[in-house]
Length: 329
Image (tube, rainbow, N blue to C red; front, side, top):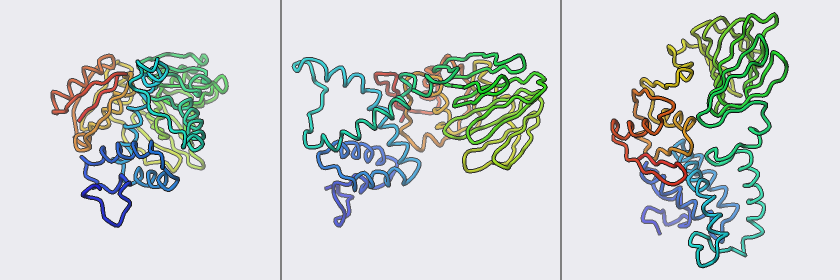
């Protein structure tokens, strides 16, 4: 039994360990092992969900562990298909759990089709989009004479009408060139309308950030109407709309120049941004390091150089794994 486990609690429950930053990763690994055990139950599944909901750090640790194992899935599958004498990675079969795992496996395949691990292949949503960009790719699309869209990395859009698009995910800069009728951009829970304007829209993790660069943009969210003038920014999601704020100078459109700049931003935010432009996955394993405010500027094409900068300037330990996975701790 773990010495930190309360004697009146189930010793098999990995969440019985203390919740210090150094322990959360080990708890996640223990949960992963527990998930693969022969007697994993619905009660265990509920306890795992509760553990993930304890804090953002718990949720992040579980996501990172999934990312690592999902990234290794192709190698594991190749090993499983190899002759027995060459198969050193295959896991033993678990006949007693076939019925339980059958539904989970089918659901897992569906999840991977919708959200592939580490962006290793295009999702079904991406394949069905009218236009899409891959990791590190940028693309310009002329939707009409009055509407031009510059797409950033990992972006997908659908064209709904000659002057209307839906930003399904990612980031784009839209130029509305004096259209007689406003151009329309649906993004998440809102709609953006503009007749003569240039504006940046970022739709990630169910959150939409709209930055007006020139002209004026109207943001519609349910019954809420808000006009953004040049230099203003607004964020919304399914729950509501935040107050209008001044847009950080040139930050919203910095990606158009091929460089990213961060001033006074948490390192965790920088790592998240690197992951949008870099194949594979960078996993930040140190919560304290992730909260550190940093000042950095680097080229989108040199994300590995940015990781070396993080290592050298901020004392991070960097471990490279197959599949483009990098652990920062």
